[in-house]
Picture 1 (cartoon, rainbow, N blue to C red):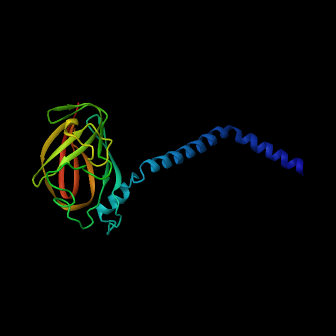
Picture 2: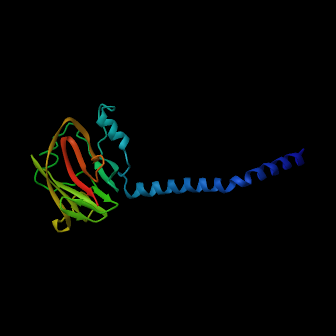
Picture 3: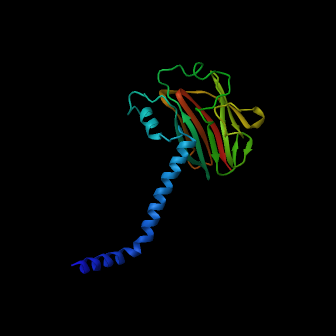
Length: 218
């Protein structure tokens, strides 16, 4: 009987041989992914992407936004042939006075929360009359009651606007602030494209304010 079981075991092992490399690869990738997630969490404990939560709050699916932290989000999109990635902290309104209160007028703002908001262009773009080379930039703003100054700055690796300096600005654009009908509870960025065109905009929306940065793919 023992010989029989040994024989069956050997047969089954032979059957599994072709799949062994794939099983090894699967467990290696599983281990690597878990390790990378742990490293990311240790580096950026609040930089967990919670787009689902923020979207649920904005859509009204979650009635009460009880999460006090500013969730980290990413927006991806394309304008023309340029892929764009926006990484930002998304604070909630949560009954607070935002404009002229939590966010002061006529002061440089991080346009998000915690780590500076960053925008990555995979190709060169044109913003207003300025050519902006492919790369990653910080996105700051100076909110006003009627007009905002939108800024792309070279130093995207900073906390809030602590190390901001105008000398590192790549481009500044003055735009009109728009009013949206329904309040956006969690700060949100969108990439809006004009159909059949290489032009579009990057829009910031929070509370009842929307501002847009015009972008043209080169």
